[in-house]
Image (cartoon, rainbow, N blue to C red; front, top):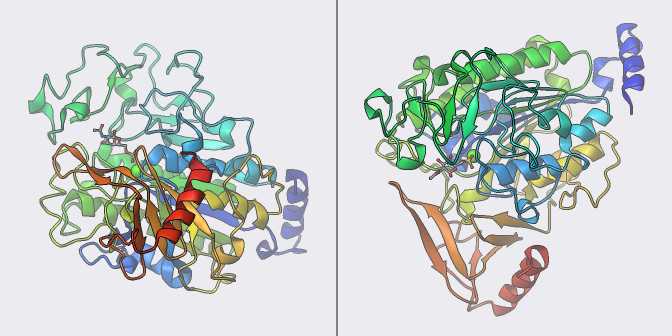
Length: 502
Ligand code: NG6
Ligand code: CA
């Protein structure tokens, strides 16, 4: 349906001819960063309270076999927005903060498809899918494009990449917020620019010490990956970031409530640097890592109240998930490892961020649509890559399958009408892929990358014919049964090779 028809529908609404409930539902995707399966109360966390997310699960469906496509950020976000596995795009790897946009803007995306259906589309929070053209270096002081707008977002308020990467500024609709033209921003990832202190030259200025990778330009007492100069007035304050994003998300809802809206609320908690607002310090027993989760949950609660206050609770689909598995140490010595105690951030799953072990991609995933979707629990196999085809189907959009190549319409599973999800899905780690099919998980021979507790990455080496796990009895992927079930290995190997090539 196009915008014009929607405008008419809204006029009918005002005239009392049609009710709000008869229009297409609003869609809010709350996408957390590095939050693990076991970090959420309703998935078993006890060291951190998440009442708002738990309430979403009371009102909605809590999925136990939902996956991000990859165990790092850029590839997972790429898949969610484009409906394609990220291993098909060699540029879809963890990007520096000055990388060009990696999405082909001629292709359908989740926001562009919903926009075509009459939705107002908004991005608030983390981006990390690149900005600008590959052919010329980006001038941060001009209009920053292509970016979210060209990908399909009418409105955007975001950071360029991550909190630990420069430029440490917010960008609203393609312009750095609060930029003074006499103090232009320069960004470089190869060599120093300007004369700002760095973590190496001025460690005494740091709130938290960091490894060498994160010891470049200091912004607001935290050293980052990459160098920046200028933009003094535009630089963010980390403690305020979650509230800045929350307020923009609330504003977007309030300004767009008269028509269907799609909000991609890409929260940054609890990615490093973990710097929650002081009012959340000490709110968990896990130090800043848990406190950041508590703040994230509080913000989600505020957003849910906003929906309620505006009479939108019943006509809004809210999806909560995360982009990749958890990590304790990720560049800053912030105490996350020391204070973790018995907390299991990945829940029952092995590994976490960066790995193809289950903990890297098995995500918390809750969908609520009060009044339409029956609350419950579902073990249907779903991937975030399926959101595009599923939401396109829900809103009546045509989606050329060759564009959203890997996206399957799983609306029956998502809205609780069926327990049947995908037949199988691919899990992308760092430099290797694995496959889950039914109860089985297969990892081919190679090195599984993991984040070590201090500084180093380490690998688990898988030897031929690869490793096979029966997840219902072995959620921790400890008991390799490849030699007992050679036919299963062969079947999964062939499926995996057909998708990713050998
Ligand atoms: C890694 C960083 C890590 C984090 C990650 C991106 C190093 C050694 N580590 O390269 O700190 O920034 O990139 O995280 O540089 S993600 O969630 O956005 O994928
Ligand atoms: Ca992430």
